[in-house]
Amino acid sequence: MTINLRPATENDKWFCRRVHHEAYRDVVTHQFGRWDEAMQDAFFDKGWASTPHQVVELAGSPVGCFSREIEPDHIFLAEVQLLPEYQNRGIGSSLVRLQQDEGAKLGVPVRLRILKENRARRLYERLGFVVTGETETHMEMEWTTNKPIQAARYPRA
Image (cartoon, rainbow, N blue to C red; front, top):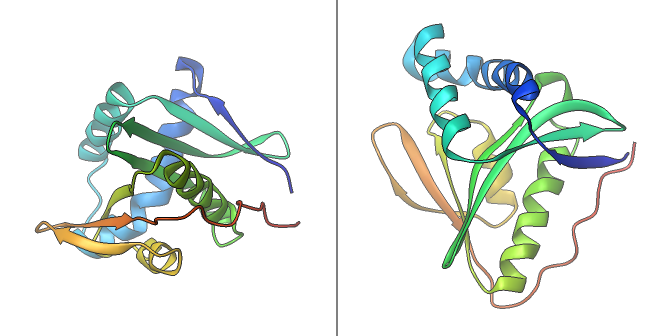
């Protein structure tokens, strides 16, 4: 399995919006009781405008969107989104492990924020993230290490 990240362009915006909606629809509906398309479009537009995105490709086909911010004191994972049919295949784990490796090399923690009902929390916990705070709707999580982690490996097909 070959996973690639490439910079997203304006031509990718429609695809990334679709990924956002498909990746979040179940968790948002479960946590808030309904899906508000206009509100989710606004959340997507705000994120798209504020952080550079990358398109996740599997064997050359787009399967998700990824966004991170590298700050002087941490790496912030803004978005790790995959189309539902590509979830639970190790793709997200590989992307997160690459960020952990980068954080270890830079000597900074990796941080993220997820909706409280997001089942991806179990993935992040398996990868060594711990809850560091919470809001009414989100959990804040962080991974840190004093030593480099094992190099990320892409899952096999």
